[in-house]
Image (cartoon, rainbow, N blue to C red; front, side):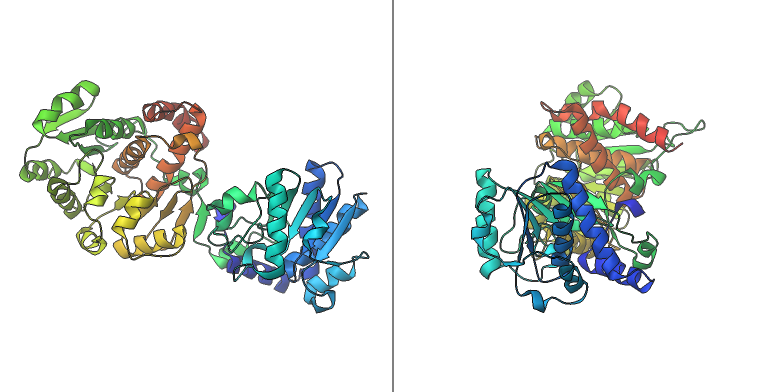
Length: 492
């Protein structure tokens, strides 16, 4: 887990403070940071005319070290400073004193003939939108980057990107390389920050990992280390009932429910029942002879199915339709206290009534909205994607899977995982149904809800990446066996 921890700007500041208090001088951290940036540049670029643009804080201090290191390596380097050299304080002032070159005033004219820009202006902790001379300089640099005549390397975070949210404060530059220190920040993984950071390198500058236990961050990058210890591992004594009996409430648009059912079975559920209207049962049965298909006409029929204690996890929504039946069936499932996944139409029927939904929750529940569904369900929530997902989880008492290329999984206790392994070709119809079924299958096997949601999101991203271009939703579950074999082998 420590390897996956994401630190907010304030938590990273606390890591610095604790390290300095333990006897490591701040100047030593700054020297290590600047040298790590220079080393990353030297490893990727041949010598070229370089401008290091420094801000008035510690990010700028790192830039002075980078300029010194690159010049020592024989590069043609100029340094520009936002503000006055005499106004620099603390470690940044000491780093500036060790630079024996000029510190030119920030001006777009300095970009003329520059091939590489080292962006050391603001870093991750920017507290307001960029304006004035810095805005003009970055706008000119962005125009050159867009024209293909300039490349940028960012220190810590591309200037203008909020380290906590990934949002842009006024303007930012797309970097080909960003070097950050000790641990990533949420803004490195959340869009648009992730797209602007380019290649991301995390450098060790001498901060001891022990500080993580003192800081106790609640945000992490999603990956197997986060949930592998709780992943279900069938033993010699296992049988179909010990591996869980999942239920998909099948709607009239049967394709969605069939995709979800296949995913739940492929990811390991021991048994799966589809509860569907009698006129739809033949389609479900023909598609999956290994599934149990149960005719359901009215709510009491569905409640009778849920009354079976062996049926321990339920999915509603895919292909269901935004109808009264969807609302009453989802309410019935929530009242049982069983593990429940609400997706698609089973979210939309609760639009604007998250409070009513939360009052029904009695057991582990996972909600899987995309952005449009999220806004309909939680119209009053504002802020970044991470902030809204965390607030929605707290408000409902459910696990929130706020889907997208930067999917955020949030728990009511404040834990958050940000997923970033989803390739672009995962954006195709039906993949959300597969994800919902994947979560269902893991819940049926007894995996805790937060870990089940995070694991399913990561596995679906890895499956899409494994398949590659041309992916359709039906392809995803067929990638699961090889992925799960490798995952389970790594836990032995």
